[in-house]
Image (cartoon, rainbow, N blue to C red; front, side):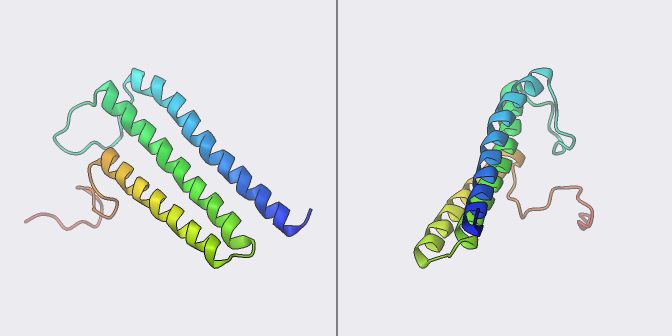
Length: 128
């Protein structure tokens, strides 16, 4: 096995892991949502989440993790094996699309953008 084959195999393993995380996350989210598993830190003033909302949050988290693994696999395959302008351009487009999806899912799950602080975070200045 030469270097290119090893990198290609590593990319495929990480690709598989990304898809597996999403599928297993979708399956595991159902019983967790049915049992009423609530997030540890809910925003102030919110009650318990409904089954639908809870399932969407759990599913969204598994999709986010799976997307991160798929981006990593693309980077491994594109950058590690003789990058060309075309392959780097395709990678940039894929990363942009997946980053947009990740930000959208984060907003859907938490109700805030990833760069916004959650109320009660350490280091946040108290309101006067």
